[in-house]
Image 1: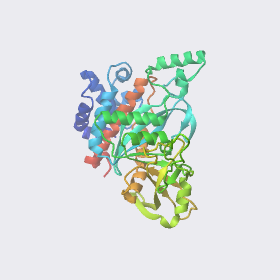
Image 2: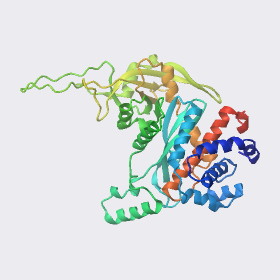
Image 3: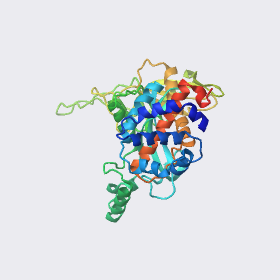
Image 4: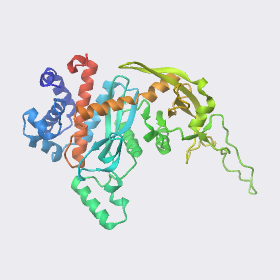
Length: 412
């Protein structure tokens, strides 16, 4: 935003900051929090502390001290932001994804050579996992986690020299002892539990195949009674909906065990090809900038299997929706989703929710290009979390303006 645009909404920004930073114990912390958010909103190529301070006309040491050595709780701020975001956005789904933070060197917490969808390849970066509240028209981040690679976890190596070097790096960055290497899907589940503890309820969980292909992730959602629709690969396996488990004949001890499926599950791709293209329907899921977005979709009821399926007490596997996108010009489907939403859920709703995760890409783009999400140059665990929290605050303020006063952001 330009200086004049900031000035026009100054009173609303101050009111917003007062609410967001209300839990900070000192008045100077609350004031600097609002100042940092204003710096993120102001136009400028870099949103690191020194250039922001120059645009704000303040000593950059004030921002530096606030981010690195001041005592304030980013979790409390994030909780207030999440509650406000839920009220403002009124989400139809929560979307889970991760994004890369390209870095030079090896001193930033969690930085390593690892695959990043942002880069589209393996590169030197940090990875942040996030949960967003979304609709077709608005979205906002609710929570964040920084992924810790094995190279930053001294318990992941048996070499005492390497372990000691890792411990020194962790100490320099202030990484809490409890923050260890965990899969990204587990970080996502931890955030869902945290958000639930804050009194927020997920309408339905959406995620790409990086999460949806993991049976442990889907099982963790089901154990929490969370509805989901997640993208998966066509190679995932399932039994047909009408498949019935059987008991083996009794052995000499009259023990028959539990009912189990005696046939092998087949791939989701095979299920859809067997059903045939004739069962596909053309559906629109939203209006984009170039008109209606529509494609051909097919939906089946199946019983997802996998390597370690979780059976019901009667030996059956739970039923789920299998949704496939099958373009007329293709010999087979190009995308697949699994969902545990009720059996009477309309196909249009399944498709709309399966496609809604595009909003998170919109968020990442604006958080990075407009608000400097990946511009933070500090090298501490706390500093990273504080920065992404404050960028989230700036983004939520913009989202609020768009929904209530679109002219203030040039949206109308």
